[in-house]
Length: 367
Image (cartoon, rainbow, N blue to C red; front, side, top):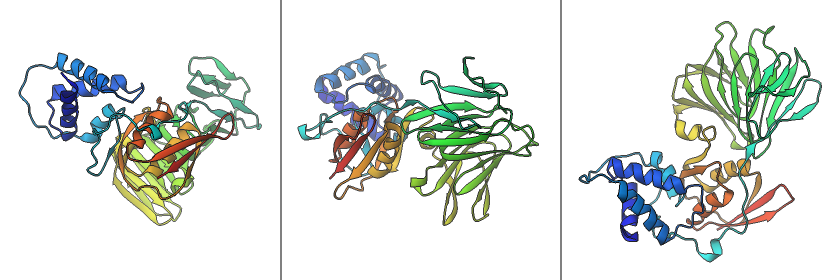
């Protein structure tokens, strides 16, 4: 198959006109390239096409109504798709003035725990799960974090920008903490009527069931009460609202104005200073961070880079009038920043990166 035929196949994939076999092979082939350099040459397009057609069964072409959003991750290495009618395959390499000057590695497992006595312990980046026990803190492989025995009091579990980690509380509740977040929790829930924790930022909870002792998450604009269920709370202050997404079970969400709603599975509440709104949840987008991806649906450049700034530990500065074009798509959270920026550069957005110190960078965005 030549380059033109490969491009036609990609266009048919986007239009939803591939057979199931073609669709599967397109996605798997591009995923193979997803973590590599994305300046895709004609030779690489042809190579991918050959691999696809080599495996295809002989079948008649059929038109399928597929969910473009579900498949877009597979071609994220080529570009993000805009909501408009922009042609995405007319250019498969960046113009010289849009090349990335430098690169930034993605975030990693980074976190700390501040003990009840004020001592802060930095967690091992080669691990990813810490467990709270009556005799101290241990990693999930059984190695000791701290043998300081604390049977009561409060600890704070924190991640910096560019960090993520998991914690298992004493009641066996599992918490995944996203970048630039913190969770304050009691060392033990034994002598409490409720299991109360406080969240800043974003976390995913798998709450251990206990019908007699509700689990309560307090955040800036709301309180969430559950008995045992799976849910995600996004409470970053610069977002201006608190989003709770429920996967299973039920939760009660109470706003600061004392308005209450009950969430059912696959539903989402958005609490702001104006009140509470409930809508169907896009689970793929809401839980992308936990599943190792940066995903965007109908998001503008500022919303996308807000997530990027947290995960890649960089400041963002906007100069001039920035396009309000909306994007759908995503990349792996293990990708370097250049992958995301090169993708966005296809829409005509220009970037430069300035080093601020040895650890942080500033991303300057220009029209």
